[in-house]
Image (cartoon, rainbow, N blue to C red; front, side, top):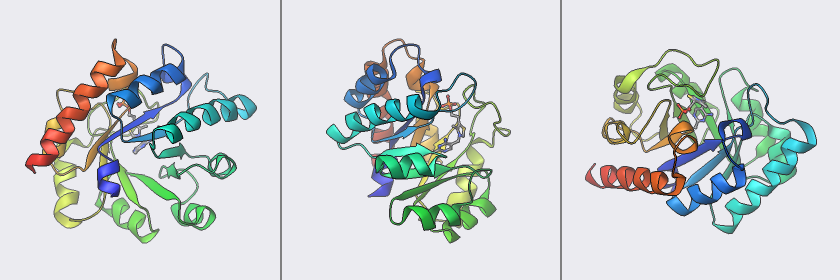
Length: 215
Ligand code: TPS
């Protein structure tokens, strides 16, 4: 179930978009995304009521199409909106505490190595987001790229953990990422920076699904 939802995980906030975020999300949904994360972060990001209002609009869209709506690093917002889950990094509110606060909503944790995967599982995470796999332009404080071998390494030791790979993933690399053992890809720029978002998303979706069928 979770592994299916991780297939094409779209992560986005207003500063990632060159046009109306709602229009971007609409096209991405029509293109086939299977999960969405609202990540309103970085210089110029919305805060307070503006952040809330945008989240509310995006959530409504996700609900219409049955796409799980995950909030990045803001448990209060997730609870206020009755979102489907929360995603946290290693520096954010520790996973155990988030799990206590959100009950059985989805909990995702960013990880960079096997040790962090084990810790995330101990905190009852529903999935882990491994990355950056490749260099990324979308995260200011991103760690060094860990490469495809880190996916293989984690998969060899944790055969069943729901794992989505993130960071610099494109149409060109999606197949290798799945073949290395990821259950899906999470992307910001591959969708947000595409000239034709619907077509690009559809291609990414088909790519991932084809690669998953083979594995
Ligand atoms: C599921 N994270 C790692 S690399 C990156 C982000 C946001 C940038 C990707 O952008 N796993 C999940 N959600 C997260 N927010 C993270 C990890 C953290 P691009 O696709 O443009 O390279």
